[in-house]
Image 1 (tube, helix red, strand yellow):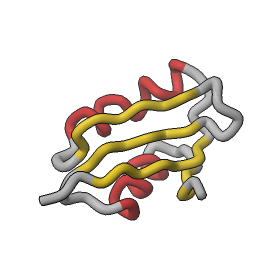
Image 2 (tube, helix red, strand yellow; image 1 turned 120 degrees about the horizontal axis):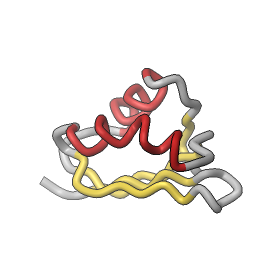
Image 3 (tube, helix red, strand yellow; image 1 turned 90 degrees about the vertical axis):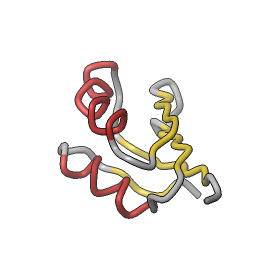
Amino acid sequence: MEQTEYKFKTNLNCGGCVSKVKTDLDNTKGIITWNVDTAHTDKLLTICAEGIDSSEIMKLITNKGFKIEPYL
């Protein structure tokens, strides 16, 4: 299977916010690496994944109470 890089605009503004989603992102099958750039204007979440699609990733984040949308 091929790896895909996804980018999302979020409202994960600080380390505390990131820590609330860390366990889910670390333990979700198919997510290989991830990073949140809290210094970026759009609080950019970048995920390298294999076998998981963007809607599943977005559901993970919204279930934790955060906003997320595809970064265009």
